[in-house]
Image (cartoon, rainbow, N blue to C red):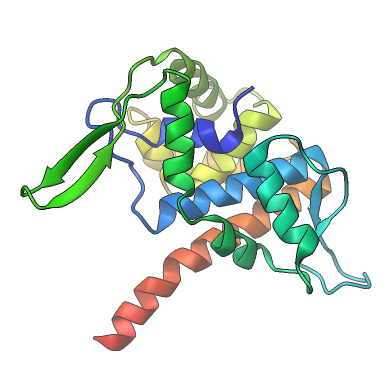
Length: 225
């Protein structure tokens, strides 16, 4: 099984150009959010609620550490912190170099190739064009079935849809469907009964954290200008 974050990156890379559909602010953060959500789905982490000893909306350990290395790194971050962190802080601390690490894993699995180049002959750039689209087709067909045909998604697909919706890229992943209908259906899935309350809360809080992280550079840029 591939990670939710790996599958998300596969869906958010343009097959021909190898460039991400999400910008450099959104991409690493939504990928880090995917790791948090996967840990919540497995029961390793959870988001605190009201009437708990720890203040609500903080990430805490709730199960065994995962064997998978990237998931373990996020788990250890939460487990070893002196004070519980909010989802946004976990995302910020987990997002550095994450896109490149996940892309390297996709290269190793044969799904994409790595292409290095220079913009204007000066600035180095890396892209990841598609090499084997079989996995991506399975993922896209599952998302299309849920978003366009109205079928009930698997928890894995529902998590992908919820997170891709958080960065408003559902219409890029399913490009030949009505944007408004996709957005509406994605919202319904994100808020639906596809997972337990703890996981839905994790998805909701991670989505909020991703959007907040994306808005900070915009606010700073607007203020400084």
